[in-house]
Image (cartoon, rainbow, N blue to C red; front, side, top):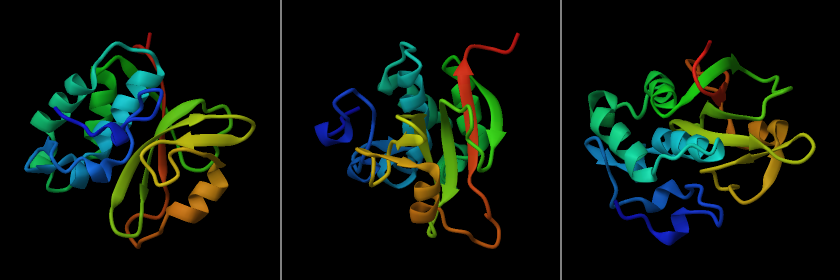
Length: 167
């Protein structure tokens, strides 16, 4: 799988999904439907697990529901999280107190989108695979700039993550 160099940050996280026009994803491309794959790969990288972007991509590309017609589902992301050695600790809507990292699912006004986010300094978070991927911002600022409400999709959903399986 070839990814343009601009699709990686200096520390190896995947960003700029829109440039992944040559990366297949189900019946589509990662540029159009692959945000779930990027979010899971970035989470795997953050937690220091040794899976390559090719492994994570292969899993999602081959098993995305309906070939990605509806994008990546939240269930597929949760299954991918588990498949690569993480677990979903909980689901949050707005209160991110005590959250170090997670995958945020929200509506952009045009479509649903997944991003991996991790805690930065103070009350700020780093949001990968957004147009602000190289700067930190508070969840309140991110919410007001990016999250749009639709009649069927009112709140963003945050899957909080941790290493390993539940004991």
